[in-house]
Length: 508
Image (cartoon, rainbow, N blue to C red):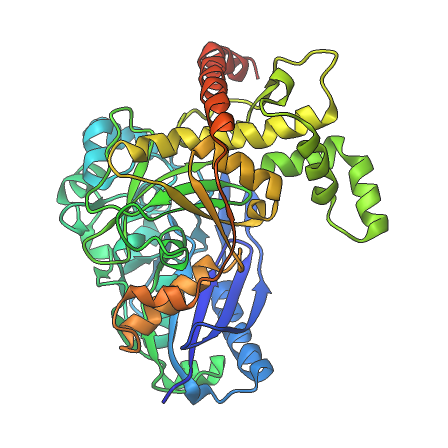
């Protein structure tokens, strides 16, 4: 019997290959980096062949380092960056670099769609706003600016769909990545004829949608030679990274919720129906589990704000950490712990890169408010963590209008901070569960999808063998009540400055 599952997490900065035993133990992982190319202010592209070379190299080195036989791998599956646009010809050859999720060049194409369908109708069909972030708007840009490329395009892929093709020779996508293309009917689980009619895009250029657990094929002889995988190994589709992490964090049933606290941050739950917000502040993804949905709120710059503070005003902590060979965040968190709830009246609006959920305001800026002479460095630091958490809590409160949420699994770099764990417990008014592995949600989710697809696991409850909870933080009732009052002030500050942000943008 095969003993292992191989998960590839194809991210923005590199591909991480992780080997798990079928019992849920992490055996070894290997990361191979590649570059994203930033230019023209809002353009971001990557070479698809860089993804493939990273998958080949990481697979080979991982198998070698783990000391296993390739034939012992039962299946390979994927978690991959979403909302991209890679055009390939009939042979699957890339026709240009992939326009990735961070690219926002397609503003003119957004306006083209707006003339034919309202934002609200678009949102209720796809679960998302019509913005330049999604794949269909990017494909429209290619059609309008690179007509020869568009004409030669046979299919359009996201990152993991391209790797599935390279391994098997087959052209597929699945619901979570199809949803990230921006023209997916969330209720019918198929490409939306209405949105496609508004875009003028030929729907035949979009790949066939199959389940996330679908075996797309097996590793070909040519791919086996490149990757070190055994010819004939089942290749299971997997899903988009944000949704695959639902599985990896145990969000596999209604109300099961997780928060990823990284450079950006998000809160996602699982539901039986899409959660449509009247103000369209949150979005809904197609879950990788058939028949379920992953309602979500994602903020632009969460842990990134705390990193900015570290790099700009915490040089002392950074120097001390360097001497002691520990993380600067350890010293910063010590100062945060000395500051009381509410950070001495200081409020931080964490909108340094504009904001997605819940504001959807590209003009918003980062702001400290309420500072007084008696405030300390610890107050400033604590206000950043509180501001990030309160912003996410607005998204959480929207999700709670449709589903009961009493506990949240927290992953990502921010989950390492005990003081932040308690802030989250108190602001969210929820039990905070912290797994032993904080950066492996995508990999574990992909491994379980692979195991279900290959018939090793009966269902997604197999994730229980992978997740080990190390710590639980319980909300303090007095602190919960204090944060309710502070959250109201946080919201009022934002709306008081909303017009100012736009005026500043126009001056800039």
